[in-house]
Length: 317
Ligand code: FO1
Image (cartoon, rainbow, N blue to C red; front, side, top):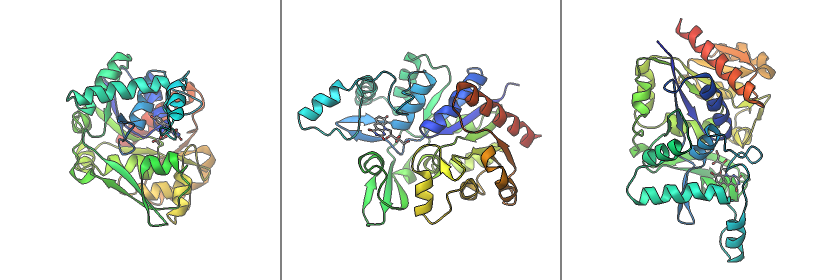
């Protein structure tokens, strides 16, 4: 029987590995579930950064320099808005705007976030299902040293991740339901593994794993859950994960990521640069492989997807 992979993803790093799987697996063998805790309403538009990064990546429309938005963006709208005294700190490109306007319009007509995502993915020719983790409103809030709690995009983009982080709160998560298709993907007979992509463990992956019913569904599935470290050589490939770890009082290391996931994963993937951490991660009771996880080229993405798939077979054997 063909094997099915469920990939849990945040933005850039997750999207890269999801693309590797999309090239490796036939349609029907992959479901990608994206974090929606970063979502917010801005200028009256519903913005879903992680969902869009994965969607653009799978459609080969992504902006490879910025890591968000579309390739070949122009900024006419934003420049004009700024001239009018509007908020321009969150840089919405002209092409990207079409997505937010389309989504916001469809939501206003009563469609769910899953439905709007499905419609846009179909329109862009994406063969594999991409699901938001939930259709309900979940907002990641960042607790900071000053005592102020910041909405995620205000922390991340407006304040450039500068405030010292003391913790996170996922507003609305306790009452959120997994989106249609999420639990059924995890319950598939042909499920081979669930892959936690190399995304930020605290703000991209935890909101997905903490969704009511999700951990139970992973346990019931009885298939290996494999996490790929987003920290390589003590540094995050992209984003503030390493800075957050230090501020939260833990070392910024792949070992600390494995420790964070301990009890929730069955396998861990370390980069070659962190080969010396393998014994320590395995001492946590987590079988580990060492491979090249830094994805520069498409071949890197596919190779990593293949290594993770082979690892899942070893774990299931
Ligand atoms: N990230 C930035 O650092 N600056 C931006 O101006 C920015 C705009 C933006 C617009 C649309 C979108 O979908 C994403 C955007 N991002 C921007 C990225 C995004 O805020 C973060 O990368 C994710 O939320 C973290 O995964």
